[in-house]
Amino acid sequence: MTGEVLAQVALTAANMLAAGPICDACLGGAFGRLGHGLTNEERARSLRGVAALVGERGKPGPCWVCGDVFGEAEAWAARARAEVGEIEFATYLCAVRPSLRWQEAERLLVERFHLAHAEPQKHAWNRTVGKAFERLAGHGTVDFSDPDVKFTIDPAAGTIEIDIASVFVYGRYRKLERGIPQTHWPCRRCRGRGCAECGGTGKQYADSVEELVGAPFVQACHASGAILHGAGREDIDARMLGSGRPFVLEIVRPHVRSIDARALGGEVNAAARGRVEVSNLRLCRRDAVGIVKETDAGKTYRARVEFEKDVSPDALVAALDSLVGDIAQRTPRRVAHRRADLVRTRRLRAARVTRSELREAEIEMVTDGGLYVKELVSGDEGRTEPSLAGRLGTAAVVRELDVLDISSDGFPDAEEVARGGSPSGE
Image (cartoon, rainbow, N blue to C red; front, side, top):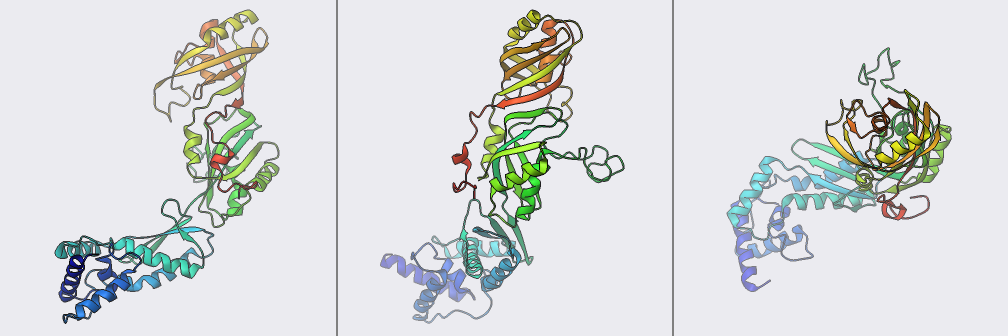
């Protein structure tokens, strides 16, 4: 810092002290970008000493900028520590919601004294309270991107909001029983409130993959719930076989974070009793959710199809061969109530007949992600073109559908999603 700059800083500090009572945090913060390695309070003490040499010692009273809110930092840190309580965390973030009066006072301070090196006061507050919180907790490090706990303090309202980051677990699930939806479905009649039709459960279906997988994790983490993010979804009446469907389980508001994901996967499999199975579970990062949901992976299906009229094996093989290529599908009627009415083009990559009778056949198909297989077979009253029914000239319906494989191309491998890298995923 040059002598000229130092002289200007001393003059500005003296003028600030003469203008009204100001606390050390606000005085030092006005020059917070100068003098590396110093706290704002240390800067303020030096500035007051220099100003005293010219007879300016400052005025007593509450700080006109922050209203002495910095003097309450320790008390707020203690309150935050108490409210976090027994919640397990390794990282934290403190945030303040400054009042309009505080923001306006800070703006006036900067403009009146032409402060070019001021530190934003909310940054100083967050740092002050955060350090006190960390000292009281005895552990933890600040994390600005994805903290385990974040507490937002509103000094004017006298409130603290505690946000607990979710825990995420990556793996694959197999659904071995038909009639189970992927996620929880509220009762259509009561919309989850509970009625005679749903037996007071508020659910359309007794179980879901989400609930069967999530229950042991919710209990182990003392969490408020769990959300299953799948790489697409199979129909309720379809099975998910093969190596399973990639998914990320989001455990919401966990009070315990140090879990053994693989051991809990064993609990899932034991409790689900062959209805649902999970494998390759491990803790993962939040961004794995986007990767899983956005990856457009190819799928292999097995369908048992019934025909209205007799279909010869040769005719069936020829019809399937002719379908390989681009398929234009308007949103199926059965899902049109919850999805945009669009025409999408997907590709049937390969198809073969594995069993053929005159009125029934079993076929396997390899498709792009997002191709509606039931409609590829039936035609959906002309909404899918071309279709197997259209090629054969007779009505065709899928009676049973299994997903045999979901391509692993594009999905994160274990090392990409793992936090840490221990075999348990801890």
